[in-house]
Image 1 (cartoon, helix red, strand yellow):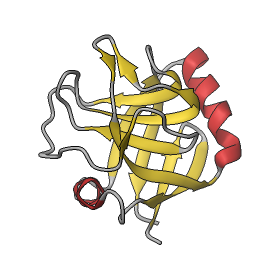
Image 2 (image 1 turned 120 degrees about the horizontal axis):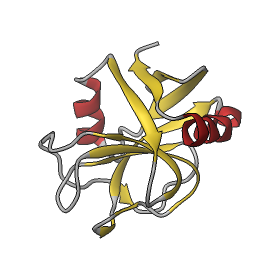
Image 3 (image 1 turned 60 degrees about the vertical axis):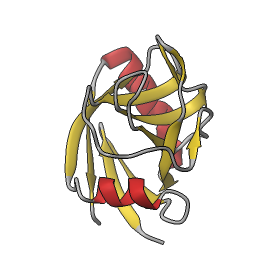
Length: 137
């Protein structure tokens, strides 16, 4: 199992790459490490946070894609009818944009620190954007 550290706001998580089901997405994301950005609360999808990536073209298609991630799952939407983005579910999510329902590549799953997902989500909702960093342990 290949692990990564995710530091979001004041919380630290361990996540595993979903290499078997999303090998291209995992490889592409690994090439970006360490990756620092900010997460904001979603507008359309429910209980989730996202990193908008605009028109960034990562050269990816769909693999291991879903519209209904479980809490702790990260999706990477490779772009198309909406902008490229990374989404983290912390509760009930139906992945969507103003264009309608989307599906993103499930490429990372939090395996340690799940108890801090809801506090992170609520902090992002009520206090605004939070720093997030993905790095090798």
